[in-house]
Length: 302
Image (tube, rainbow, N blue to C red):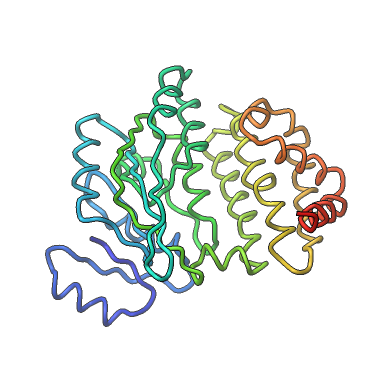
């Protein structure tokens, strides 16, 4: 077990001393955020597969033994499992499980690797409830972006371009703590953190360009960037803050007009985005001001 930390060094060294054969502690440079910590762990890892656990979550003792056995048995690049949502009082919600029938049907009638990637996107594949083949990550230099939030989504969108053999387990092994003070929760409430999603999306697009994916699979890249940067971001931008961040909304609109002015015609967006999401994006492209005030008006009516 590798435990990267940017603080509490002395206390964590006690764990390493107590469990020398099982625990390794690694110092992370300040303000590298979660992406920097995960990169340190990936570089230090030596096993065939990598599992990721956020610092405020915990896993069942059988998670990696069971998932590793399945990964080896089926020769998988990725294997995911179910998880439980846990509130700050320790109360468990209903477990969240992959839908095996839908998954198998999509894979059975799929048309190649791109389809498998779309299965993952729409199946809410998460980086912390599974195992990842380390060789794919290392060989392709698939490191997390650092010094930003939403680094996990950006990393997943990149990694999914390289994995092909994907499996699911019906075991519920991961416990996800709904911590009101976590990076994920605070990023939704603090404007400067929220719009780091835009920075993460731009990082991802740069990676797609450098790696040749934009030329090889332009429709897919347009779909991913448009959703990550714009469609899945604008509603929260309007509803999460007391004052509407109009400057950021207009900047997002200008970026989409510059990079992907016709993104709403993309067949993947037509197929995989909700009707409400597409209509909202179209209105925001026409007028961010009109979109913002329309969303707030409709919210008040509810």
